[in-house]
Length: 66
Image 1: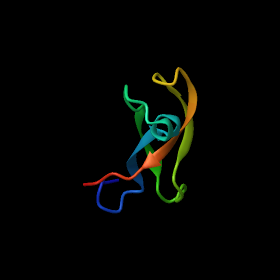
Image 2 (image 1 turned 90 degrees about the horizontal axis):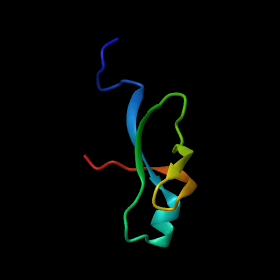
Image 3 (image 1 turned 90 degrees about the vertical axis):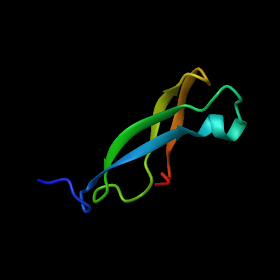
């Protein structure tokens, strides 16, 4: 299958909700992953390790400005 405009897999960026909420000055933990648009139409939230909070936190999908 060709990767075109209507490809179901899209790249998403997950950002730590704890760092954003607490306004940590050291930085914000971000992960890059893929999701299938047809199967997961809602925003993706995964529990990942945040090196700035030093614990597992919920990382939510953020909008990519292109």
